Image (cartoon, rainbow, N blue to C red; front, side, top):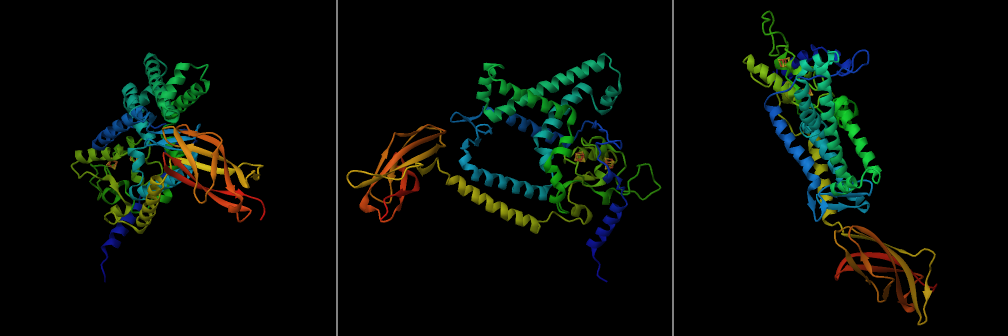
Length: 476
Ligand code: SF4
Ligand code: SF4
């Protein structure tokens, strides 16, 4: 008989998993049986990972509040001006004409997120998502400071409206609202630019009613999310969380409970059973900001915040057992003791991502500073001139994507002839410009009724682009 240790571990793991209570699957932790909100009051987390996450959050917060002030040649480093359809990434301006680059960039980002999620689960949610950072590392900390830890919060909630409750609620609402207002200002700063926002604020509410309305709306949304809605944003609204079911597989690394080691769970004092390491203390449940029990397995609600890892490690320390009963691990890592493997799925996503990155790189490097479009002037055919020459009138539309005013010259590239501009082609920085020009050719140059002409666009003698147009002549 061939002994297969992998199969043995798998059947033991499956047996242990099957014996776990599965009723949690019939309900959402934050909704009661009657359909009301189960308000979660998580206990204040503490531990190595929580400290590390705090340091990360300081870095992100400094970045969030500092970035709008960082300028490149007078423009913000990042701008997402959907109103004027102007976007700046790392100081580079992108226009609606660059939509293709933008779409490829977005696609690359989505594939990156998929690849990352397949390999490392929702690590982004716990360590880098702005919602988690602001909720857990800013607003929750203020709440602990004002209301105290979970038990004190519950006591305060149950209390009748006495002086203490009024002062604490008032202080919390004031702090949450002020912070929401501050975040709303910076959020708007990312859309219209912090300088522009400052100008609008100085002009006052009656002149800039739109800006002030946007500020009020953003403030109210942030206040609603952080004061009341909270973890529901991750559980109900966030599409990324909902995608987990299709993205994760048995090799994805997640915050996971080692049921092979932990089950059957039981009190430390319970000597009557052959127990696992879980002492059923519920410390991991008490700290969970989404109110779930990680021992039930991977759940949609888990934002991988690692609070339960810290809580369980502390318990393991107390009972002198090895840490890591809850840890970053894959299902196969727990059930089969397998190390993380580079699966065919990961390889395929890596290939697609690499190709997209190369394509995006080429698009960015070859992106023209000036975009131009030439069209024959509508309603015009051709003009026969006195010396047997023929002229056509064209319109040219230009976009200057650079931060300097530029003067352009037009030249015929594929035949001898004359280009006569109606006015100088001076395109202001970061602007659209439109003008007209004539092309004049000798009649004998035309072999057909329609002749393809190529027009070069030059700046200081350097060719920026070559465009084609149709030159109309009399029928031969
Ligand atoms: S189960 Fe653990 S990692 Fe997941 S949300 Fe709750 S505390 Fe955070
Ligand atoms: S903290 Fe650890 S020991 Fe306590 S219930 Fe959770 S998994 Fe079990």
